Length: 170
Image 1 (cartoon, one colour):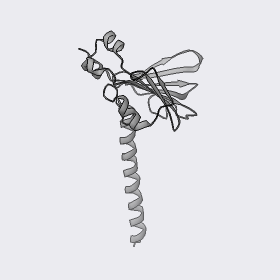
Image 2 (cartoon, one colour):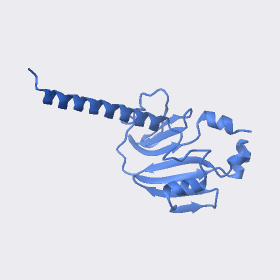
Image 3 (cartoon, rainbow, N blue to C red):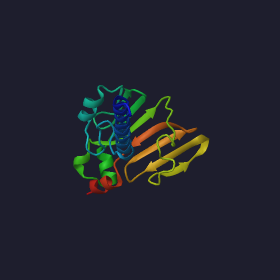
Image 4 (cartoon, helix red, strand yellow):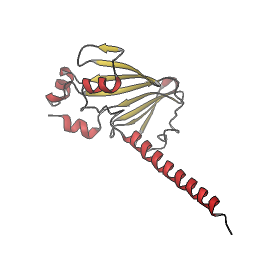
């Protein structure tokens, strides 16, 4: 006869492992398709939202609608805002002035690769190989791009999705 205690422990381990895999899959799928980063959403979040989430910037240029830089775990985040000139050039709705246009994560010492992020064979990403070991993976539909140098992640870009850009125009 089987020991019920051992069976119970094994069943708990299997259940815990299954829950962990499902949770990790959900989190990763949200990361890959996210149009936002850390609660900052392009064309929605404003400067006050960014500072509430990330604190005081290390660089603020130029003024209210310019660019903010923040030190974060793993690197530096640059947040670029929509200004009046960008609204006019791209024929956007005027109320979008002052919202986040782009979030750029500059990774220091990242070990992530296209394979570890599951984007190397993902047909949602367009691959562009450049000089000096630079490879870019873009998913314009979802508004995310990755830059790798010699196979290691250097930058992640979060921008509005194609659908959000279309809705933003007058």
